[in-house]
Amino acid sequence: MSGKIVVRSTPTSPFSRKVKIAAIVLGIEDRIVPEFADPLKADDTLRTQNPLGKMPTAILEDGTVIYDSVVILDYLDDLAGGGKIVPHDPQLRVEAQTLQALGDGIMDAAILIVYEGRHRPVEKHHEPWLDYQRGKIVRALTALNAKPPVAEPNVGTIALACALGYLDWRKQVDWRAQFPNLVAWHDRFRAAVPAFDKTYAAPRD
Image (tube, rainbow, N blue to C red; front, side, top):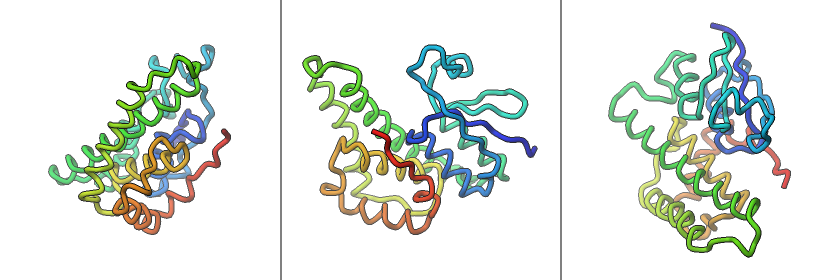
C-alpha cells in the first residue's frame, strides 16, 4: 500500500503531534497529508468522519476512517513493517502502551483545563474541578519523575514527550520546576528523536 493518509487536526494538537512524530520516526512522513479540522465547528465534516468529532482522525486512501491517535499510531507501525514503535515483545508492548495511556491522560487533563478557561466565564470556573485535573497531571509526572522511561521512540515515549511539550506551551503545571528528572529525560528524548523539534508548531494563541 502506497496511498496517502489524510490526518485531520489542528496544527498545535498534542495528539496530532504524536502522529507526526511517529510518521517521521517510521520513515513514512511522505504518506501523511495534514488537513485542518475544527472540532468545535458544527458544520466541519470532522463530525461526520468521526462521530465523536475528535482529532486526530485519519482517512485512508480507500475512504476508511480510523481514530484516535492510539489506533493511528498502531496502524502506522504496521504500515512500516511492525515492531518499530509498538514492540513485538508482549511485556515491552504493554509497558509502552501503558506509558502511552499515561501520556495521553496528561494531555486529556491539560486540555480540559484549557477548555475551562476558554469556554466558561471566569465567574463560573470551578476550582475544585480544575484542581482535580491538575492532580492527575501532577500524580502522573511524580510517578514518571521517580522512574523515567528510556529515551528511545515508542508509542509511550512519544506520548510523554508530546504531553510535556503541551505543558511547556499552556503552563497548566510548572513541571520543569518540580520534576528535574523529567527535564533531563525530555532533553535526552529531543536529542535522540529530532522529529520532536521538527514537529513543533508555533502557538497561535
